Amino acid sequence: MYRRESIEAKRIARDRIENLFEMAEKLTKEGETDLSRRYISLARRIGMKVDISIGHRMEYCRKCNTYMLPTRTCRVRLSRGRKVIVCLACGNTSRFPYGKSRKGGD
Ligand SMILES: [Zn+2]
Image 1: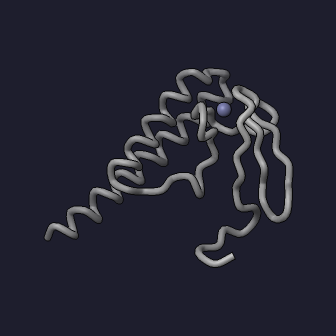
Image 2: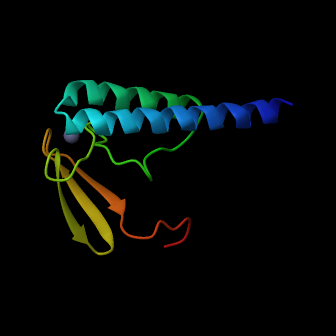
Image 3: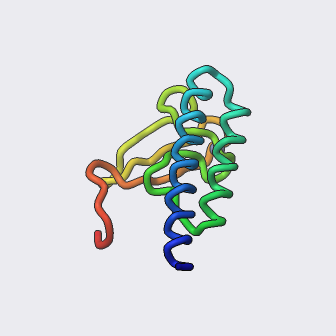
């Protein structure tokens, strides 16, 4: 029973996180980067609470929570199978796996 509730809580949390990121993307495209950052920081907090890692699929600056929108809020370059993203807001560099998302082993 307890476990089932916890899975349900995670599912709900994941939906909320995805919605928040969708909104953050939209806001960033509209130039509302401050509000967008607030959505991302909220999404991160929800993820932490239910122990979901959101970093693998969602692209945002780990340092200032800016949504990473190429040419608008970040610069992208590829390096050794990884996408290196430089945040234009704070200069922080983030690395993401590039291409097919594989789970485990590299
Ligand atoms: Zn940043």
